[in-house]
Image 1 (tube, helix red, strand yellow):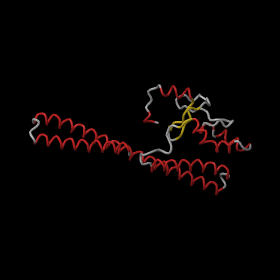
Image 2 (image 1 turned 180 degrees about the horizontal axis):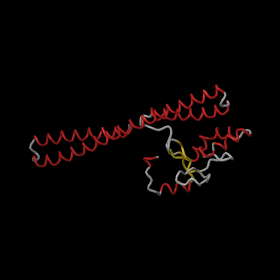
Image 3 (image 1 turned 30 degrees about the vertical axis):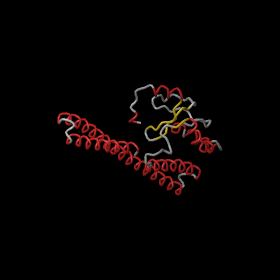
Image 4 (image 1 turned 90 degrees about the vertical axis):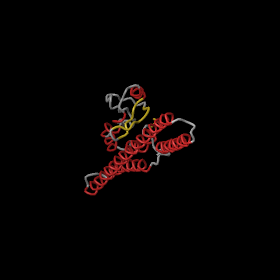
Length: 213
């Protein structure tokens, strides 16, 4: 990760600084009292940097485990849907739509697992343009035929897509909002949630624990 690389560079710099300080002490250019004072500051900085690095490594490992669990869950659901298709409990169109969404999710999760910290191919918060591009093909499928329209109505509560194919706000802190002027999409409780301009402005000004999102 890029942050751990910065911390490693800092630790390396502090070690060199400590070595230089020892040489200065041995040369008699500073007193032991001055050396102890400066060395204590260096030690504290190194300890803080090491603790931060360990915390980042632990957090990275936690999220990797979480992502792996999510990918396995999606794969299990995909297999279950395949079984339902073979048993005749799910029609072909419904299976294809579900498989496409699940496959996108699995692919996205695997990209995040493989991400090396240099750059993200997908962001957690997406702009309205990115949201519309992401769902464009799915909305086109939803618009065709009465049966497909009924499916779109069924998914309104979970995807944020309205009867007309418009994506509406699904602010979890303001569930009654149905505005369609989507500003961003946030990752909340394991899925992407579209948020309108007004709600996003309110959320941004609130003291919300994003670690729970």
